[in-house]
Length: 402
Image (cartoon, rainbow, N blue to C red; front, side, top):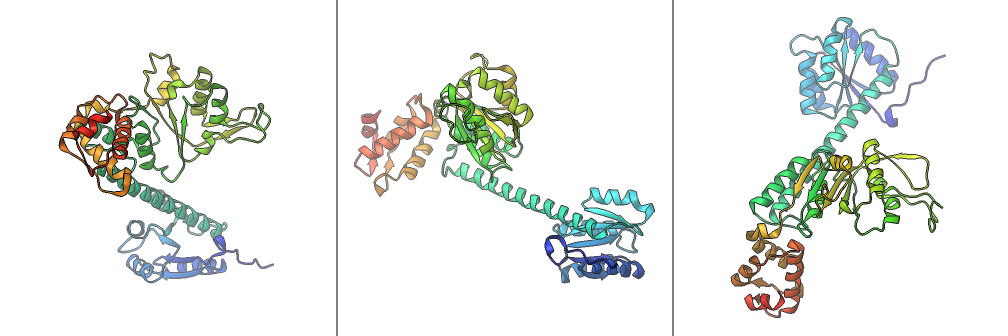
């Protein structure tokens, strides 16, 4: 009984370039691949192969290793550099296995032994799928890298919810964010209230490989103790009074992205133990449930407390505080007040008319202690803009609202 040709991957027409200096081998491969229902091109040398790829876009190249002139390894390097979306399978004799393994290390998707049996179609489909997956991941990483550069540029320009300022203390924070963002390392952001800890966490997320995933924030100080576990880990229907349906917790919501635990120092000892276990196992169990759920989450946390002095669980602290970032208080960077005020004036656009602060007004603001830091300054600027009628805001206007 004759065998029907197998459908190509995804029922699509696969184009293959067979490269070998021996015509008999090219003919043999051409017959087998056309039997699979694929389109086949041929080339007898390395330069011919590169020219053929320019003329005929292909999904796959079956490439001989030993050829006169430009050998298969050189052709492989050229294809990987110029056409990374094309899968390359090395076609090798028995004595060239070691070279074939080295070729895989340089980017080949697979290798076939000459004269070998088996389902060549399935093997080549696997190589195509592998290359497409790697190329998709490469493009995704490149997009994330470009997005990270845009976000960091916007940060320096002071646009949106960004770290605005040019002080050395803020430059240290920016440099630390740039270094930690690309990895999945956990970061503990410390600093007084209003210094921009959440902004720093969002910048880390936006510049990470998880930027296309969710950013889920949990304010541990704002959730009652009896609800914090279900908020973080979810709950099964009927697990407690009022649980009329299954609830998905923040860990699951953040799967593939970033979970930001704000005011983590307010977390109870019982919840700390459960968070520690989730971080160790990358799995959570919903309240009232028995089945664990695997999660892929990067955890960032923030606090305005000294966690060691507050008796925070030390083993959890060590896992959260892999990389520390300390946000400087506004009183340590008075030179940034002028830039912050200009940023808030542009951002708030109160009344729809252009507004500005005089030099005396800005100097007065720069001398203030601002225990509430950047948040307090923003609220003050908004209040002054709303209640001061003139286009130019002077020192007297500022004094009235201090």
